[in-house]
Image 1: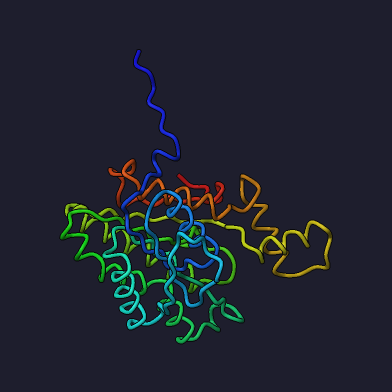
Image 2: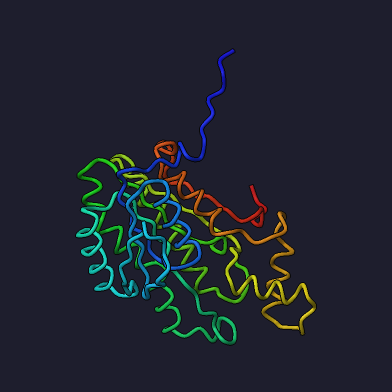
Length: 265
């Protein structure tokens, strides 16, 4: 019987020579992804509106406002000048602002701003980098959506709807360009820990006075089969695999990384 082939994280993470652009790269998932890909040997540019000032030295930073078409165009120009091209694009930028009093209070402005930040940056950046990827016969695009696109939780329906639109667009993009050597996949995170979430959970654990946000968060965590929020580094490890050569036969797929929250086949 042949010996099983074992592949270590270091081996499947070898990304030397890859030129990577990560949006929303100053904190949370984006920061973890940029750091992990740089550690795996890629040349990485992270972008956000403000430079956090403490990214790993291996990660280059470009400030950009991706809520506008001009901001997206300027970023691609700057990243291409620095990297010489983009082999891997991680579309991670996104944020939501829950309507103050439910869906009926969500104005057109809220809907438009939500789409401008959570859908259109990916569309614009993909459109800018795809021609070079197609010409070279290879490229990888990752769209970071949300488990909320499938399982709306909490009050931010505009954000969840925008992520659902991004997921549909991503699948269509994968179908259209698979034959041109470009792979496109989605990652749909559930509740991922950050400083604010950790602080609220700590307050709740120590019997702090009732806080509606903390109560909602505690209920959300209680519904996660694995019993805890995810960590940005766990998402980064999944991204690293998906952009590696070991994932060369994977495209058009959605990977929910949510601790089992989405309980459907």
